[in-house]
Image 1 (cartoon, rainbow, N blue to C red):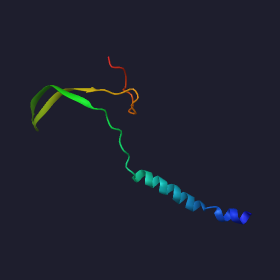
Image 2 (tube, rainbow, N blue to C red):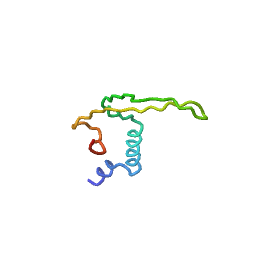
Image 3 (cartoon, one colour):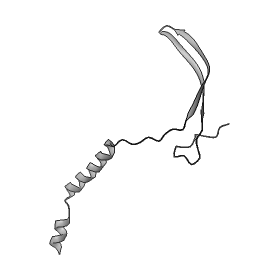
Image 4 (cartoon, rainbow, N blue to C red):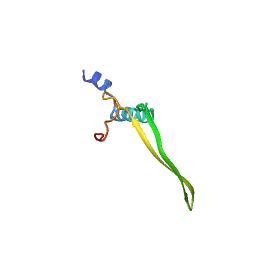
Length: 81
């Protein structure tokens, strides 16, 4: 009885190798990103500023985003006031 139990038992080194193999497989497998809800971006104002390094564009934008309550995305940081 003890002989069959010892033959079925894997070595500790093999168990560690299997464990690390699973970890490496998980690291290498790409994860499908959660799809972000559609967002509408509107430009409120834009102006070109001259700097010593060259011209830069300064834009003021508004982003409207709708998130469903049952979504898997994290909730907003706080209430919109």
